[in-house]
Amino acid sequence: MTTSRILRNASMLGVAQVISMAAGFVSTAWLARMLGPELYGIIGFGTAFVSYFALSVVFGTDLYGTREIAAAPGRAQILFSRILSARLILLVLVGLIYVGVILVIDRPRQVSIVLFIQLLGLLSAAMTVDFLFQGYQRMGPPAIRQSAAALLGMVAVLLLVNGPNDIFAAAAIPFSVMCLSALLLGVFTHQRVVRLRFLFEPRGLRDVFRSSAPLLLAGLMTLVFLNVDVVMLGFLRPAEETGIYAAMCRLFLLSMFVAHIVSSAFSPALAAAGSNPEQMRAIYYRYIRIVIFLGAPICAAMVAFPGWVALVVFGEEFVGGAGILSLLQIAAVISYACMAPLTALVSWRDQTAQMTILAMVALTNVCLNYWLIPAYGGIGAAIATLAAQVVMFALLV
Image 1 (cartoon, rainbow, N blue to C red):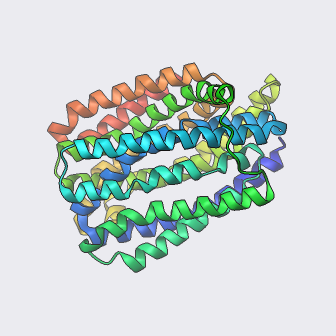
Image 2: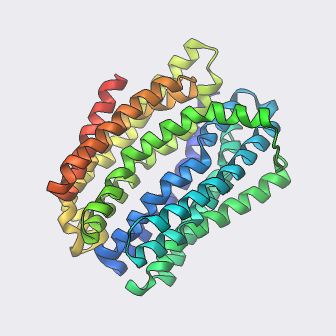
């Protein structure tokens, strides 16, 4: 893959990510101000909770599909059909488990309703076909889908969420627009790229599940690292404290937008160069330089002015999260340094090493959160995130 093509793909994803980031920034600020820390904490808890089930529906097939289609474009039709079939099976199974878990856990009625609404997240995860275009190294359609969904979600939030009574609309909007955008991209894919069909061949499905399982486990470990703090805060601390922490986490995720752009552009290039060690090395080091150069300044700015950022974005009720934001942004800087080796391990099929590292980091994070959250709340969760990120960097090095 030429440098110009990588840059073109990165540019398209960059524009989409900037639009998504700006729209997400506005939506997050508006929701936090309209709902307040307590209700925003319920939304944050629900989103973090459902993300584990959504990831189980995807089952690592997005990374698997991108890698395999990039390596063998001629097999795109059969790979695409097998992945869709696997996701349909998982959607039914995981959906039933998700509903059962909601009925079993002891949460207030308002929280349970939010969790039921966010069942839409499982559907949107199953429907998203971005991996096909990433495998073909055609980033335009996914970029359009992503930016359109973000803009539509922002408009819906501004129009429909005007106070605490609109919490259920706030829960439904993000996943509804994701479902709509995924559906439209699916129609475009069926008409212009690859026919959408299901292929329930036992052997083919076994291949998908067997190859994707390590990627799922690695993804779950990553998700534990990113979201377990919000989930544990939701169970162990008041909703208001959870809301403040969830808001700071939202800024943490927004600050990582450069990493996602560069990763999406370089992942298929790394996979395609898998048979050429010299090319692999050149692309890999180019990836490291670009991701750190672009990402670190954003995080440094938030570390320097955390109180001002929290005040401007969320309002006075969230200023108490300034210390949390500083710690999370320091963790984000380290995360940028970890991004290149993590992506390379997937692209070069060294999934065992990636899974082992992420499992150790996830376990570290869970243990630290279990120890620190009861005593220190959100600050303890931020310290756990930073410490776990340092552990990840050390293991990757």
